[in-house]
Image (tube, rainbow, N blue to C red; front, side):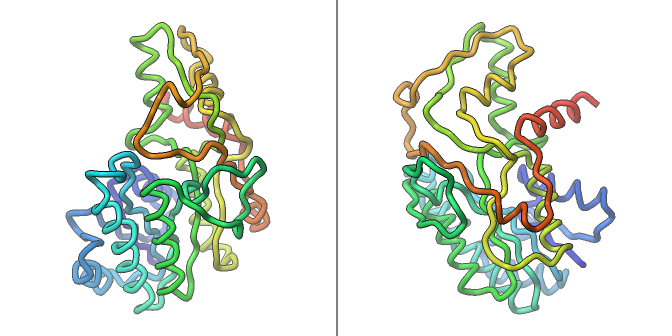
Length: 280
């Protein structure tokens, strides 16, 4: 296969590119300066030039709180219009598309797990745009995978793990919310699953992919900092008001993804492997 990675400079785009290099898969990558996905002619130019058979669509607007006001228009342009442009270009040349979505498409009121076909009801602008991006893929594409993920951390970019480690260096005590529950996701696990779907020719459609197990943000922080000389204390979400509403309980069912034959390690094991990779 010949792969095109969009959003090549982002947290996931860099991880996917790193994995493809390691496994020897031919790929081209495009960052924003090389391909503006909100410009259909820019997208067409790259697709005509690279003619990929598979597109890993990692480009996204992810500033969740800014998407509520100052970034609202850009959020929609990138996550919806940009995704539609990429989907149209992929369909025009018969390429497969892997689109990354989010647990924020759910409202978080479900106290059990969310299945792939459960009703969506996003509560913030980012979630609404990512869901609209899903629908754009479904409308434009024949051969596609939609992969919803959550609580992403990894080697590249900014994420919760780096933030906690950095704060622990200068604060004797940290407070972290304990009333929001989900599944952390290591970008390496997500990247491997994206490649797995294509290589195994899994059934097209929507999947949920995070690391196994679930936790609150407080429990996640405790595990991250278990060897650090810092106190981690639980608080409720009212102590940290944010512009964008976060789902309180967005644990997604992983059964469909596991049935493809993909082995999903726990988030604790993923965090351990991630920490080990940083120390090399």
